[in-house]
Image: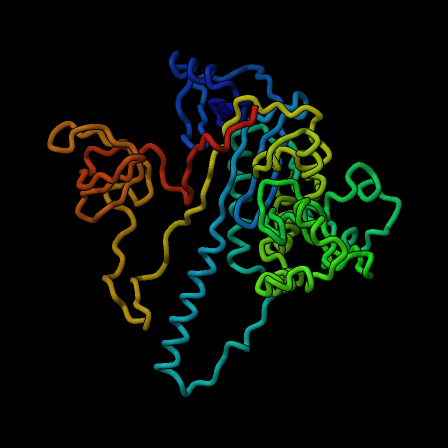
Length: 436
């Protein structure tokens, strides 16, 4: 499993240790639990001359999920890995709902007022709240890992696709265009655009070939808008036929493909908009930043025969990727952004009218909804030990959501905090573990 973070008595980060070593230190009372997620221990005594190995933090930003990996450049060992799920879509939906409620209210109450929505200007470098949320999540976790691990350098995937090389494939002279990485930028873009499936039959988990929608024999070009992905059988069946002839018996599919060729990549556009702002924010932390492209990341992952996963993509970001990446036993931490609640005073119906009581106090008896607690109930019908997230009530009778069930009516007197709510949920999934 992944290594355990260690800080000294002054809370300065040390080299992460094997879980067995951390368990021994806890058993011998030489250390105590400092943080649950990610699991960190703090030493009770000072070390005179600790040996600290510098680590590199690699980041693969994504629209829905961002991959994080801590790599030791000297040994090629992946010390820690995580997949950070963003809530950008939830933020967009919440803002759309708020906009609809406000417009409805203005239409009912202030129809006589002149519209003012066109009076506001956006400042230079403005980003939407959903993009700011994604960027803030990444910066938050870089700062958290920096406090518990000896980070010295950052590697970030800055550009997803090399648009110049895709629009002008005839350019000569650069290694990534004519060397061993030729075609990786285009193929990665096509895989994202066509959802990693055959354009014509929607087959997945099969070898896919780059297909010209208008065959080159009929005057087609190598521009990215004329390319798609097809399995071997569909590619041979189409040959040099015009796509309208080939799909004459499937008009709906023809319309969808022609529309998809001109459709932008929404997720890729969101990430490309955010990357430079993220790069500038990371630059304020005072650490050197190595930049790489999505095509280089895929090349590194393919050469090392690693499967497609977000945290493995992060481990392969940049030219600094070791020739041998050691992944034995690494289990990534699955982090999901949940937010810190809503500032809305009470719920409203579809017409914008209040339909519930105003929200109560956020904390009750020192606990708030989302805290991970351990409840030891010594008597009554609910006698037992429960560990999970708590749902607080003003009466002091809480609900606890465990991995198996939801237990109701647990008094705050039986609860002890394990991990305070910090805007994220945590989980470890066996399906995301190391392939070796």
